[in-house]
Length: 65
Image (cartoon, rainbow, N blue to C red; front, side, top):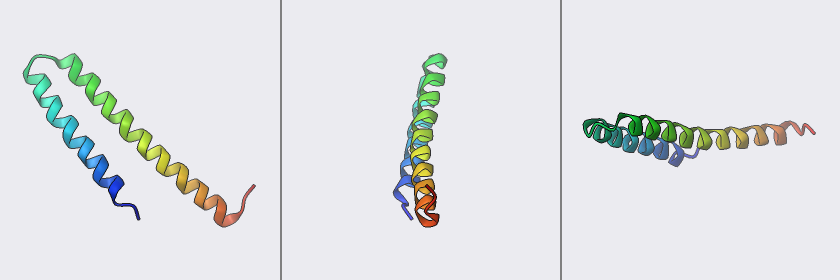
């Protein structure tokens, strides 16, 4: 199992939450929302790639063409 992906997702979450707090304190709530949305998109792309690899592995196991 690839544990680095979990660490990467957690790291992105921590970084985004810290930057979100800083931006909200500075009165830049719109930028904070955009940053949160960008973080969610980055994490979703990583998860989608992992799911794609899972489906490829399942397809190889059952040899579905």
